[in-house]
Length: 120
Image (cartoon, rainbow, N blue to C red; front, side, top):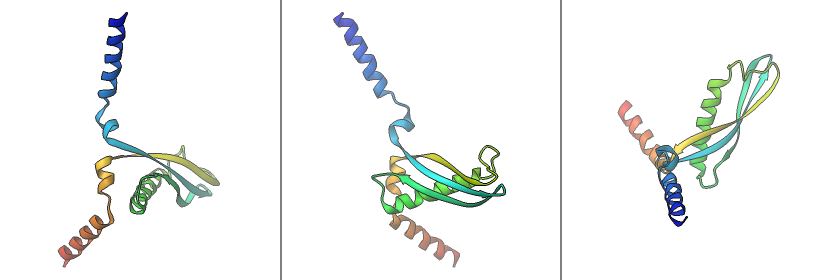
């Protein structure tokens, strides 16, 4: 009995240690977005809420931009389009921890300055 219990504990521990790479190293952020339709034409796309307690304002802004882009891409999908009304949906954006930590305003300001210099 004791031997079987030890094996069971080792198997469970091994299951916890062998997570898939993206599950171990990434964060899943939930975002609510809405598309307003009038006569089956999308008028406006709004990102309602980003659920990220540990994100900075800049990180939330960049995640909102990605959610807007993904919502924009599905706006004409036949399963999404409404005749009149608002289509609301939730997006799950998966980001690696390193990439989220690298989203800093200073990094983007430096890249923008380099682009301006290279154009001149």
